Image: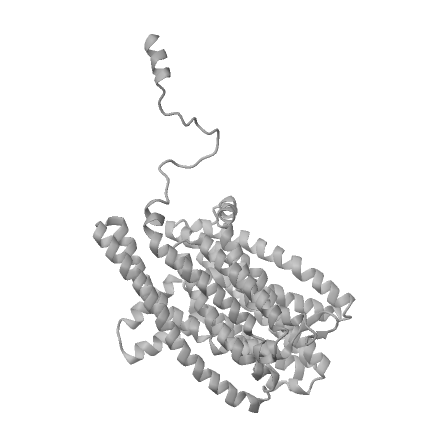
Length: 487
């Protein structure tokens, strides 16, 4: 992600109103534009096709299908992305670009196989037990796999800093989705919800194909070094678990409430709790600007300090290294605090807008009771994730894993406790989990600050590691010397 900060630093260095607006727009395109395009396409289709007039059961089946596609596509794709991103970064640094296609194909197989292991049994259950038509089940499954491929290919294009083309591909895909849904409903008289689902699947497939084609156009040579990618998974297995537990923690509180008496079951297959899920979405949207702030402020400024420290370590004096280290950690603390201050102001503004306007749009009652606590939880959560990114900077894989596991476990236990409370406290599980995760991350960052010299200067080895019989640990023996002298 440092590449985004470098680009933004060039934009903001001109220090004009125009460049500041352009920089903020660029950061939005690089982070959250694809999500807004998908949400916008779904809303437009619902308005144009008269979704509200469709039968309740049919609407819920469509809504739950789309919900499950997004949640489990993100969940099954998450374990591998961090390691693949690490491998890609190292390959680009070493300029061995022919090693990228083996990484792409190896990760692609892992993602598809792992996703199928979860998707196929559920689809069989949905058809056999839920009596959902096989064509509807297959369409939803294709959408699930297509979105997995979209998330996977986005990883490579993000590392190549092609954020604008990612957003362009989503714009093309979602535009085709809207147009195709209108054609299917008004020209071919296809049922509204199935036309929307099929159009969404086609849009995801088009995005995945465009991303794949662009990736292939960048990297044409294949070194065939698949074993090295596998060895990276063995070496950085903590990254796999870190990313998985973080994404799992994002949805654990939802899963807990899906298991309560307040849940809704659709066709004996899909389980959800609409008020809580809607409140979660609004709360995440309330704090989504934290992603932009992290890119535009924290990473952009910290990256300069981090680079200065690295350059000092390579060729600077001891005093230069110490000064660069102090500036780096001071910048880290200042930018985290600035992000929290600015995000707090923005979150409060969005919060008051939501509680004022949403009841007039039909989102009141239980949703608005659950929303405030979840808004606080996501506010802390995004700050915690920024701390995890800083742990990645210092190669603190153990600390990142401890943070994500603590976040997931605390969220799980807190959410179970929250099911016995009043609705206004339903989101307290996420608040507790995010707070525990943040405290663990902060403690690890302080530990890194106090031991960074040991980590930098004492983490290598003089001799190259290898396999074979361990040599004897005896360096010198006076008895052996006496025997040789007698001879």
